Image (cartoon, rainbow, N blue to C red; front, top):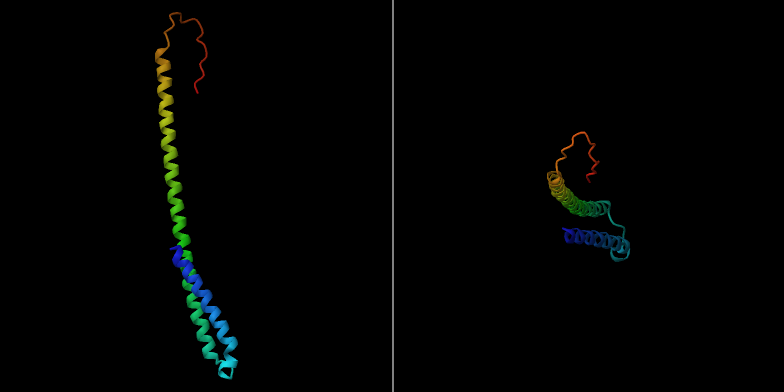
Length: 117
């Protein structure tokens, strides 16, 4: 899509460049000034070429933006998966630590504080 957009940009520049040269040399080549209908037809054709160029550029930009959104969504899903996996490993460690603790027979003693990270 990028190549198509670049080609249309070159065609637009070439079209308006040829039109400029044509109308600047019109007086010497044909001995008079161009008619209004001819100038209008050149400008309308140039407008059509320009609109096609703008449309292809917009289409290319739109496709890139949609691709970026898809990649960002995939990245967020992968981050969530990694977070869930890490959380599961931490929960397993905490469960093991709780299971491995010996039961205190003296219930009147205050149990030491545990910090879980």
